[in-house]
Image 1 (tube, rainbow over the protein chains, first blue to last red):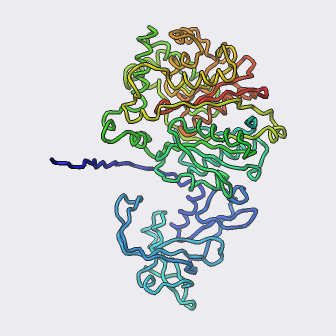
Image 2 (image 1 turned 90 degrees about the vertical axis):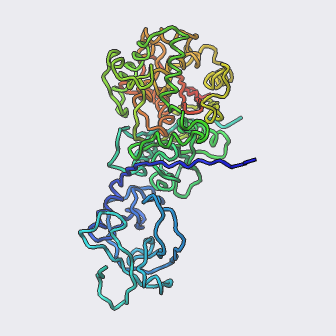
Image 3 (image 1 turned 45 degrees about the vertical axis):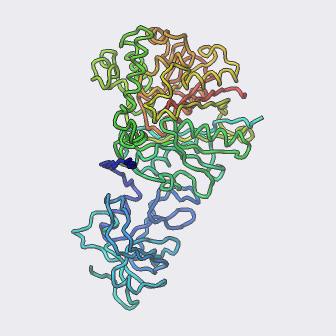
Amino acid sequence: MDEQLLEIIHIMDLRYRWSAGPHLGEFLRGLKAGKILANRCPRCGRHQLPPTPVCGRCHVAMGTDWVELSPRGTVISFSHVVDPMYDAGIGGMRPVPYTLASIVLDGASDVAFFHRLEESTAQRVRQGMRVEAVFRPPSEREGTMEDILHFRAIEENEKRGGSP
Amino acid sequence: MPERVAIVGIGQTEHQYMRPDVNHEEMIHEAVERALQDAEMNIHEIDTVLMTNMDLFEGHYLADAMSVDGAGMYGRPGFKLNTGGTSGGTAVAAAWHHIASGVFETVLVIGWQKQDATPSIAALATAREPFYDRGLAAGAVGIFASMALQYMQEAGCGEEPAALARVIMADHARRNPYSHLKLDLTVEDVLASRVLVWPVRLLHMSPTSCGACALVLSNEGRARRSPKPPVWIVDTETAHREQSVWRGGCVEPAPGPTAIEVAASRLYNRNGIGHPSREIDVWELYTPSSWALLPWMELFSICEKGRAWRLVEKELIRLDGPIPIEPSGGVVSTNPIGASGVIRVAEAALQIRGEGGERQVHKEVRTALASAWGACHWIVIFLLSKDRP
């Protein structure tokens, strides 16, 4: 007797449209201009990255106190990703390998930024490594997190402003 | 003896079809700030925050995690919950239990939905069992169509009463600054709108809206310090047939008491209400279609079976009538789904406070009944009172 177990494959094709709103919107416009912007609580002074409408601790509205953070920072943790993972942003599997890092940007030690590391940087990454954001050329930027290509290792005496 | 539960703060957004100007955290924050201002409280006086929206409508898992700061959830216990269309009602009921239990003094409860993000019906359709009836289910419109057809047959009414009910709700909505649709309708307009599923027409159905509504609930001790007179949530009751979602919408074919009848009769019996239409001054019934109003007036025992359409015909449900229903303009005018159940309670409380503005019902309001209704015939109802229970 044929005892096949049955299953259904179902594919949903959905279109989403998310509103960035004024706070995340300002941050994304900043990326397009080659800047990493945080906002700051008018009461406790802490940075918010990504920017939010309210300071969670103080529950006061974030004002217009925008701060441009340094593109340079320090790696505090990292992860080499070798196993493909479903990417809800593209609706498919994300290519591997790549390396993610949490980076504390200079001048804002109370928040961490999260992005990819450049390949040769990833191969020798360690906690405490100094890195710098590499933006895509202005004509390729679209106001998304992908406007930053990756972070790459720097020597402290190196001048600012890398190229991809 | 449970703690008494009062509404001490009410806030909502101006509900709209699209809110491209804000993300969902910012939209939630608008309602939260208004509720806190209304209560003259700051977030540090809130013990816990409960939030609700319809899962997946915005395409987010853990949508609450993306709105912690704006919602005032930072550093406090609480959670997001979802029971489908009834979500807003369930959230207020959960807040009621949190306070009634004596564990929490103050609860901020938030309902919200941002339906401009995606076609909501796609998320709704995933509720159906994929092997059995996902390919057959007709969605919300079909439910109201069968409800309407059955009502027409049993009560012997035509199309006009549901159309007139829609006109009356539109008249109320135009007086409500928070309402999404502020339509100026005639019965002819409604009857000329296209048929979705006979006899339900486009104008019988609720819109898809973006919006948020927040309430601050407190125990009696805290309510005594409230700047505005507290509105008491005397009692709440829930009934549902959730198992029906995978049985073609039916639990069993034989006619039995509906979830509304079960919940309403329990609530009335517990509170000694013998004549609901006389003892309850205003009704916010969460009618997602104006066709639902007719059977539901009867299931809620507002009138005898088969009589509702005649009461509507006499326009007794208007703001100046003896049985005012949906003074807000109802769900047919405004439906940010996760918020809709909270809005019903908010509107009932505003009416008891006498803060209905141009939509304030004309007679004195001391008691109100608010409900939330959703898939699986899930119903949550609330008895609200100006007088301390």
